[in-house]
Amino acid sequence: MVAAAGKALAQMVSPEFRRLLLKSIGLALILIVVVSIGFYQGLSWLVANGAAWGESHVQAVPQGLWHLLVWMLSIMAGLGIVTGAVFLMPTVTAFVGSFFVDEIADLVERAHYPAEMPGRPLPLWLALWEGLLTALLSLVVYFCALPFVLFAGLGFFILFLANAYLLGREYFDLAAMRFRPPAEAKALRRAQRGQVFLAGMLIALFVMIPVVNLATPLFATALMVHVHKRSSGKRIELIEARG
Image 1 (cartoon, rainbow, N blue to C red):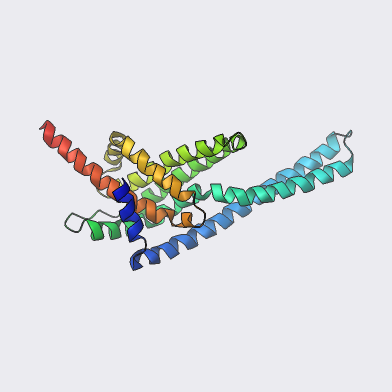
Image 2 (cartoon, rainbow, N blue to C red; image 1 turned 135 degrees about the vertical axis):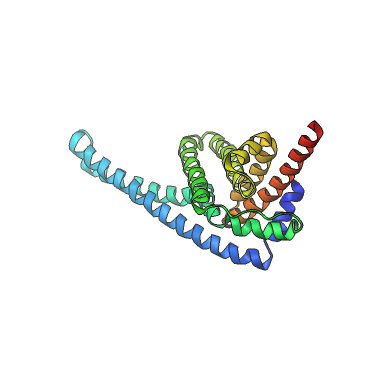
């Protein structure tokens, strides 16, 4: 696993990867801005309308206090969006990665496995579906874990383990489906769940590093190409041993 991560990191500085890196960073930044603005507007609407309802239905509280509450909650919403943008990176990168999986995987396969048959490009709708599904699940996990962030870091631990599982699953499936049908790729992932989860932990660690995490799709895809190749080799050896 360490060797696979080393190969992925080493190839990220190559000229071909730098071109993809700029494209993925650009798309990730656009998505982060759009998602953050959307959340801020939604929270602001809830704060304003909640205060308006309170003023009209809770007469015991002075009107000035309601305005003070709105002001405080608006500031908290703004700070929460800035902080949330960091924690939403797994959601964003999961979706971004689905756009570039074939380009990244092809570069890794040509550099490290030139004698082997190259993978087949994934249908765009399939890659986007896998990325969107993982992004939505990551978003659900984020909101479920958010209340626990204040309790001795429990929320951070929940987010880390969930991201390790979700990101490991997505990127392994995308790498494996270049060589096998979706059902077979998922079966191989379940058979190698330990290795996939360990690789997912490396991805989850990578995505926690500010600024660097913008390169998560490149690192994660490259890492999982190596993990899939290794898993495929083990599967062939097991079949031959049984035969």
